[in-house]
Image (cartoon, rainbow, N blue to C red; front, side, top):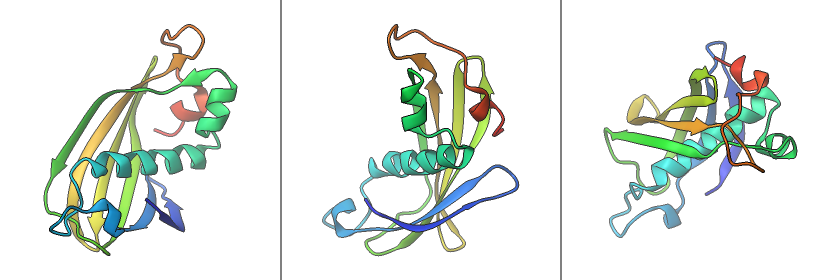
Length: 140
């Protein structure tokens, strides 16, 4: 999957990225494969963390990880090959060691999918939960 260089961080805490659907992301009917929406959510999450200045690389250098412990997608309408999508992500809950990030996938003014992922902040050496870094906690 490849994103355009365009991304935005908005005053409400949402980060948006644009993405042109390649043929490889679609099934035989030219429809984006349902599992790829979670990959889109991940790309949005990656950019959201980048905006905070606390990237996955920074997190891992501090010995932390953010494995997904829950994921949910509501499909509204299909995306197709060559569609230009806008994927938004926003931290909606960050308490203790859990983080929830809500995502939306848009084609122009049409909402195609909504959903969220929940992550557990862990210490990479012990694999035990650890407190959310303040950089992420402040994004809510």
